[in-house]
Image 1 (cartoon, one colour):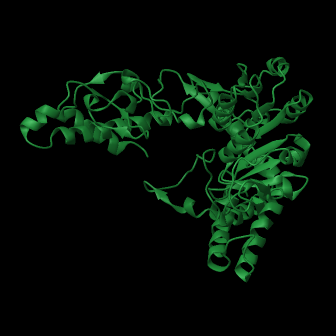
Image 2 (image 1 turned 135 degrees about the vertical axis):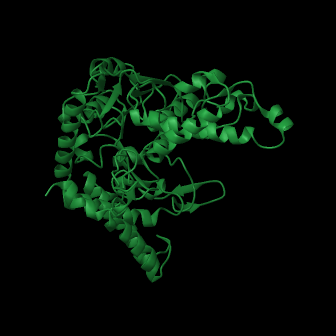
Image 3 (image 1 turned 120 degrees about the vertical axis):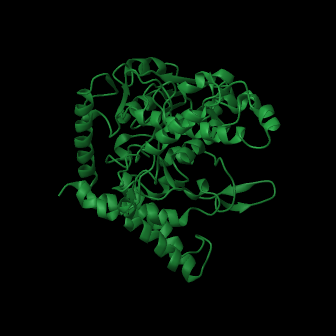
Length: 464
């Protein structure tokens, strides 16, 4: 029996019908669905054992503490850490990387260097930007070759600057490239730098042994590996963790407190202030048990077969350009491609590295549906009220698609929007907005009745 046939019944959400068809979910790189075992473990915790941890001496408190710390022990074995004190629970990969950037950032001096790569997720870029900005340090990046792999010769040259930190993704979330983390960590240590690895796209798919990798820090998320949202893991080599001051304060991370000073708690609790994600830790434990029962090697082989099939099928399609390594053994289960003649109608900014080109054709259909919806909303707005008010509100030209500051399509006329509220290039692009459309590069008059009718028809027939 194939792995997908074996596991599909374990995922309740895959029993849904969408448009009359069984749900097919291809967005696990963003967040994976949860097996019944994880859902039931969390429900059972809430139904029978919920209490706060580390401070309650009653039965429920002791049970909750036991479950929470058992999850730490299971994570330690799962990633091959030397001791449980090296496992810090966070809110996710982004939170773990921010925690490191805040703590290490306090030790940076003007002129110090932090080295990242051009293929990093924004979670491994922005925190370091903030850290060097606040301390007058310098941020540099290892370039990516045309094959979608890191330029290790350039990396060697950049190490000559004696960076304090080298931060790199284990597996690229865009290109799928599996980076040589063991070699990078060893060369970083020789140069006197701390090595920080973003393992969000690796931990769910590959066997990870942090002791063998030799990195100083390794961060990953639960929700990408069948576990719940709201919890992640930051592994820190014990000596490296011990050398850091806590970046955040609160209860549980201290032993004693005076008005003018405090004594930090032992590892790992000094980096876990406040009430931790207890139920989420229970869910993470169940997710690890589920993955280990299937076998990480078996999962990796199944994904390599899927990647090989996807690469072969895409290579046979005319006008399709594939980005990143073509060898399934050198990449994770992510395939980035572009279709000639289809302009960049939309993109998910948070899931692309700085300046990287690939766009998903499905995103174009999404923007078309949003554009049609925006036109309908605009038509409704323009036909409200009396004729005089309607004439006063009608703009001479409008954006076909706009974005509010939250990245939600806006049907307001251009004259009613201030330029910073829209990411359309014609009115000034707003950093951080989610959507950008080729349609928004031009302006258009309000849709006619015929155009509105055809827009409704296209929207109704578009796949979801």
